[in-house]
Image 1: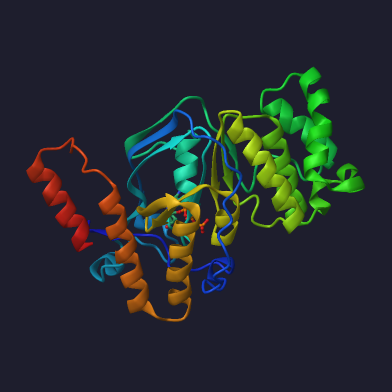
Image 2: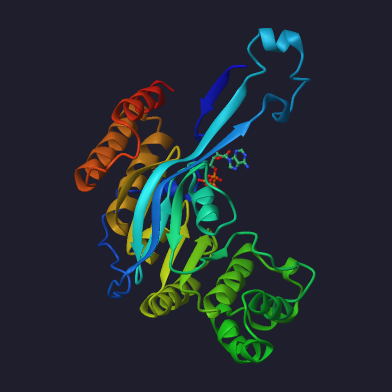
Length: 325
Ligand SMILES: Nc1ncnc2c1ncn2[C@@H]1O[C@H](COP(=O)(O)OP(=O)(O)OP(=O)(O)O)[C@@H](O)[C@H]1O
């Protein structure tokens, strides 16, 4: 049965198309000295094989559909040969359009998913704060704080001690006693971030949680992130909103169709990504393709050549095959 290789979907989020011509001075973020490597991602790939029978629609086993070529398996390259080293003191933003592999990368780093190839080495198990972090909508915010802190390994005495810090950071007033299902998405995101940050992880992975916050909560969030970094921590923040990454991170990685196309200072990388997204949104696909190539070229200039772990002939053939797909 033939296989078809797919990459991520070409759908853009709203915030990534904010005007990239705004030339206001880059925000530097809170400076924290960099320490030793805390996360080493090496040649990481996550490929999903989706059998035709799982893609919905009519009975895919039908001989007629097979003859029409509609019963093919699909391989989705969610993350494709991604390598980088992150150090303590860094906050690394991950940008990219919908389906570019951002969440998959974080899930693998958190140990929630097994890679197809490659490895992630970390000084300790990263703490993952996803959009749907396991808080219970029927319980009040306060009950969820207790639950969340216990789930993150705090003792009951430490939970009691930490609650004021979470309340202070979340700043949702008396609503803290209402069920979480009554919260706006921004309030829920703030509470999740506050719980995770107060647990003082050394490696914190945040998936979109801060994108919905208002300016004041972003400011508090940035300060808390700096505290974690200063305490020898490393933070990864996934967001479509390149502006959030510019404001809250020191470094950024741009993923496109599972591959890393840029890795550098947050301002430069997020700005390059916004230009690309802006051109895609305006239908300027040739210009966007050129910007993507420029970003790739800059990355290969700054990345030292890697020792291939495969014989040269096989590696070259594999690259050629990938180029054809
Ligand atoms: N369990 C799965 N099975 C098959 N394909 C998957 C699975 N999980 C993710 N994918 C695919 O992998 C690709 C990367 O998905 P991922 O969620 O990592 O992207 P993303 O950049 O986080 O997207 P978004 O910005 O929309 O959240 C997408 O094409 C997605 O459809």
